Image 1: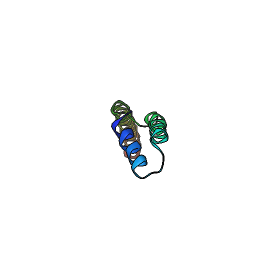
Image 2 (image 1 turned 180 degrees about the horizontal axis):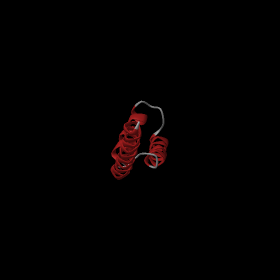
Image 3 (image 1 turned 45 degrees about the vertical axis):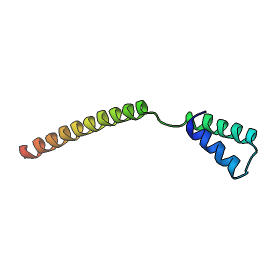
Length: 76
């Protein structure tokens, strides 16, 4: 179990929510469920890279549209 799970289990025991065995089992089960749903540093870096690519693409597309409109307006 991770440090957080151990501390959580100790708190459950200390506050007499569960006995020692049930507190440890509950903390381990909760840790297993939450650890699958948390983003890792690698996940956040990948997300940041995708966002940068999208932002660059949108700025490039916006610039192309603006230049096209300006070019069209200059002709008239």
